[in-house]
Length: 136
Image (tube, rainbow, N blue to C red; front, side):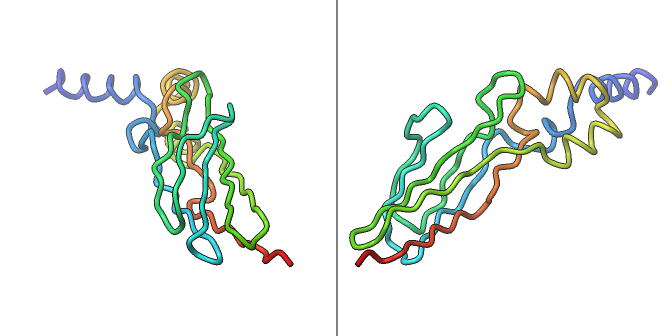
């Protein structure tokens, strides 16, 4: 019994809360007004990671895999007769990273495990709504 408790305690101490609870990817809903606009999503390097027509759900990576490497995206909406619109999607540390490591993961979770894993981030907004203005 002591061995089982020690194994569980060791696993908790050698892991980060956000890594245990969170995923490396997140579904972001891409909408536009009017619906049916073309969109493309570029990451911070300018690489197109997704494209399609609204409305559509897109699964995006939350981290680039580097130390504290949160991803950032730009969603560009285009539709004939409307001005192009661009919205940012940013990664921010989530509550499991901040509060969970305070209670359970400790410094190893804060500084070693979670910074390499996308689970510590949340992409915002979770629903991107591109409001497009008609062109004269």
